[in-house]
Every structure is written in C-alpha cells, then in structure tokens.
Length: 418
Image (cartoon, rainbow, N blue to C red; front, side, top):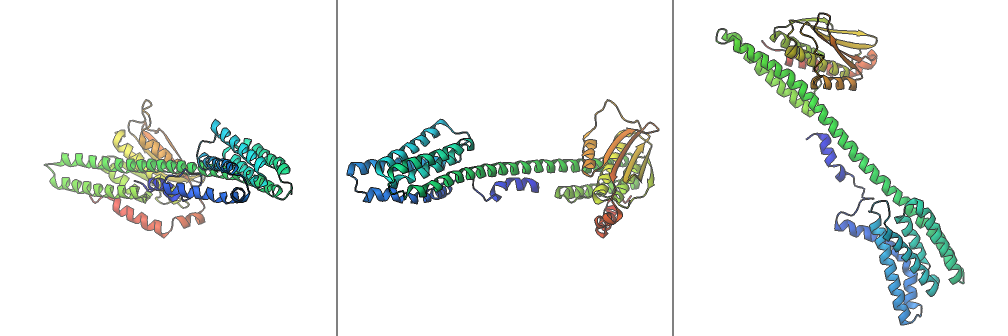
C-alpha cells in the first residue's frame, strides 16, 4: 500500500471537524442534542408563567402540553433536518407551520411571556429551509412576532427586545447551514483529491515497474540464452554470463525496492552503462555521440532522459533485430535532446504503441519535455526525447555534490562485471 493510499484511508480520521456530519455514535448524538438543548434555557419566561402565572389547572395542563409539543418539534427539526438532503420534505413545512401556530396561540392566549416562542420558530425556519425560502420566512415570523407583541404586550417592554434576536438568530442559522454545506463539499473534494493522488501514485509505480523489470528481464533472457549456447563447449564464458545474470537480478531487486519506496532517480551515466552492456550482450554494436552530463539539465530532466534511454534500448534489444545502435545527446534551442536510432526493421505502422512508450510519453510531459518516434534514415527506428534546460546558476543547486555522488554510485552498480 502506498503512502497516498494510507493517507486516503486516514482522511476521515484526520478530519477532526464534525460539523455537517450526522452523529455516528451515541456520544456524538448526545453532544449534539446537548448543544441544541442549551438554548432552551431562554424558555424560562414561559415556564415561569406556567408556575407563577396564576392560571387555572386546565389552562396550565394545556399550556404545558403545547409547550412540550413545541419543544419536541423544535428539537426534531434542528437535530434531524441538518443531516438530511438539502431539499426539504413536505412534513418539514407542516412542522414549521405547527411551531408558528403554537407560538401564535400560546402568545395570544397567555401573554407576552410566550412571545419568545417566535424566536425559536424563526431559528428553526432558518435552520431547515433553503436560503431562497428562509430569507422570507425569518422576516415573516419576526413580523408576526411584532404584530402579536403589539397586541399582548401592553407595556411594550418585552417584544421589542425579541425582534432583533429573532432576526439575528434566524439568519445566523442560515449562515451556519451554508457553512455546514461548504464544509461537506470541502470534505468531499479532499476525498476526491486523495483518490486521484492515489491513482496517480499507482500509475507512477506501474510505469516504474514496467521500465525497471522490462529492461532487466530482457537482459537476463539474453544472457541466459547466450550462456546456454556456450555450454558445454565454453563453460568459463558461460559462467561469466551466469555471474552477470546474478548481478543484473540483484540490481533489478534493488531498483524495484527503490521504485516502490519512491526514491528511484536514474541518471544518464548509469543508464548509458547499462545500455552498452545490454546491446553488447545482444550482439548489437553501439556508437555513442555527445556528452553524458549537460549543463543546465535538472534532475527531473535527466531522470526523464534516462528513462527514455532505458526504454529505447530495451525496445532495440527486444524488437529491432538491428546490428547497430546509435546513442546521441546534444543541446539546441534551450533543450537537451536524446536520440536513439538503430538499423533494424523499423516501425510497424499497424502496431499500436505499447505500455512502455505510453509511460515514457507521460514521464516526458511531466518533465516539460516531448518524445517522438519515426523511421530512421537507414530504415530502422529512431526515438527522440527532449527536455528543457535551465540557467546554469539555477541548475547548480539541483545538480550538486549529492547528484554527482548518486551518479557515481549508480554507474558502479549498473556496470556489468563480465
């Protein structure tokens, strides 16, 4: 499993914010219910009116029943509706209408102490209705509060103090609902990005394994066939080929481990040494033109050209039936250009590009370069890969002593011993 896949699995656990998510455990449900219920403390005025208002027993029972129904309906709306799809169902409008009706009935019959119920109705409408609707229902409930308050609050002391909380509470819930929606979309976007990154990582790993194992296995196959032809007449030469097979196999194992770990960074010098060995083992003469290091060539550019050299030489050994292969590296128009040409059978117009060339094209594009294939002048096949160069002063920081040490190490590891 790659690091990106592990990060994708941990995405939900690392996102500590729970706003906008339905409660997944009993503890989360209790916490959310307590957070909503704490605002019910402002119902102290209606409760005090029930206990100290001097109402008859029948009125008190009916009023308490109405208040209980109002609280349960309010909690059900705010607790459940914030986790439902954005489009409200019909029952929501019925429950909201019941809230407003209860607030109107209790306030009109029992007095100004019950006007606070309109504030809860405004908050509930802002929490559960779409913005296009709540921007009208919140002011509408507040206007009804004003009208009822003018009729039942003769002292004009309580209801003016409830108008602003009704408006602010309702529209605050509209903002909270939009914030919850935005956080849910952001969470989904993060999950999508993690999935795309994991897919890209898997594609990179597939390209690396194809390039690494394709080259190494081709060389092992050639040397195995050569060793088989040498036996039993030339056992010493066959033993050298077997030793080379062992070395190539060990290096392939190292390359695969580095590719899986994400640390593989091939160099032109190392790939050139491997290319010479592979071509020599296949009985193909090789001619090299140009230099192995180019000033201004970044590590990314060098890695892309090294992969291009490996893929091109592997194809020459596998498919070309060539006798000569020419490797050239030059610079022109601010770019480094690698050309691999052979005198073999040439391109097959009826054959589609394989995975190797497809992956190579993707590598060059990531490095800002290009790759092109065509028939060589002598009738064979030619591959040309180019990457842009940077100013020498800029490139120096990317290709310093660490890169030199890595080049030397890879060259020494990739050069066959026989």
